[in-house]
Image (tube, rainbow, N blue to C red):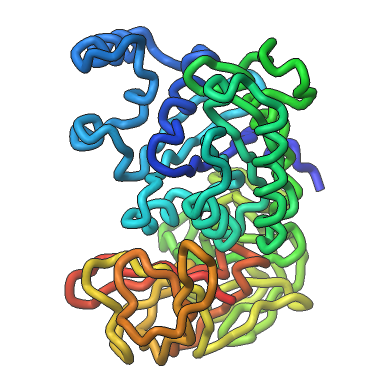
Length: 421
């Protein structure tokens, strides 16, 4: 498969997580500042803001703490997205809060990330928040974790302290479903090992953080095996030029589709072959994630928005009951056997939460059997029944077809996010 088109738009989405004052926002500011990704007016604004606050030096954290309430409190309370690029790669950063009461914000920021940076204060080592953030990263299918042991300047750049924290994290992370974990000693405030190699850590032979972000291999994370194409729209121009045209538009959520492939439309199970594939106005021979395209088929078959096109020899499950790991995001607790709107790819259906198997103690990662309501920021395992079939894969297999969101029928608010087990 020619992946050059995919490589041309090589983009790394990463999230940062750590407890309060571990230096997440400072680290992102340092990354952008040292890689010369800040506009002059931005720099002038944060210099003026730092001076007003009485900071001794330019407070790079102000680059990401964009909300007035955040600046006043000195903490991150919402997901702050920042964009920057180097000649090697483009980046989207989700700076997420460290507080337990903002777990839902971290889930939001991490849900599309390829990589998570977990910050650990070199003085404190692995703490409960470290475990919580790492668990959420693992739960959300993030395959790459970079553990940044920050504030190394406050422990005299001690190799012994760094190795001690690395060992602590290795013991804990053996329970996680993450295979690629890297460790970097840094000082976000001073810039050590962020963009430039530090002379203070001559004992560290690994890459800087930026070099790690530029070179981490993410193409292998994409599921090119299980072909999934949720239909978002049926295109029928009904114009003189295109009076017979009937195309199915959507985004490839997995696998590779080629002209001539035998496909099955779900949930009907009707079989046909791909006649043509369009990217915009251009005809192409194949498509793969994350391309958005339009397919035409050799047969006139009934397909509507929310249906899914897959290869005939490799299909997702078609179910009306599903088990999910659910993060609750609303002030109003989950209503047992309450009815909600369930959104899955381009599909929408009514659903009911049949029951909760257990909640996860977010700090110890142990299962909790207490009968208290599932409240905001809780994570639980739940069983959901839906009124029309959904075409699903497990979340670990495919993030796109393995995730749902739950919407309150009365307010239309998103109240929960689920990962299919």
